[in-house]
Image (cartoon, rainbow, N blue to C red):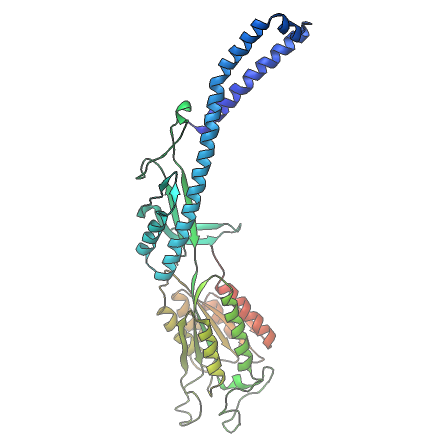
Length: 414
């Protein structure tokens, strides 16, 4: 029997009885009868009428009382199941995020479910009660769970107590009075996480030793800055401070991110053998790590190092692709690359490299910095990488861009 219909039937009986009493009183008044006097003159008949009315209402009152008790119990059971399923989903999602294995995530959820009671019994779940998929925000702001979406970022738990469950449906106290002796609660709970692997691909060409607003065209090997670490007013020092804004944003969110750092210049061995500074066209300065202090440390090392070269952006992007594809599975982690340069590419095809990144489901954000940034070219790089381009003419704007891109890369999708 439908509980809604039972409640409505009881309510109608209740009001019909009292409507009858009310109509009887009105009938007496319209006939000029003093009801109180009539009752005093006929006490036996009044007592008999009240007794008859009580006998008539007693079953209705019992049904209503039983229904109220069972409704309160059903609400309690529903609350217990909601609490249990929420915690199971959270534990399973956390386990999947850490170990990237659906079977272990399911087992972790089943184990924690035993710690919660529903209607006096532990909540027993089966493997089929767990779904894995991706939760994404819809146009109305609500999140939609897609069992076919990747990368996987959420776990849905379908908790229930019915005849198919090992413990069966929940028995009610007075359900027999209205023809429904059991209650079959069902609750779905979804918990999401976000794994993000980020590679910062940064320009360490010689021009990054120039002042932020300098309009210099090049640096000769006789320049005293050439064989020194970047000076305090250089573009690199401004980048150093902006990257630390980026890592601070990451520290303050709930995303499980790994960060790596690659830098690019050019191979100058064939041009000037024995010249001071780094010589590789691209290097991996920090492999993917959850240690954001290590990211800051890698930047500090570069800040205090000597390097030179041209601007082989494509080499840096390809190096970043190698690192990101060697990290967590693309099925369980979003991949993001942020490429910064202050100049024009001197070798390679950065647009093609960004297209190769997109083919690996890596989103490429592009930043141009200073007065000489190749904005049109880097817009094309961002478009090929299905990301976004931003230009920063000064340090303050550069910090804002890194802060914004950090938020975009790690936006929580639960």
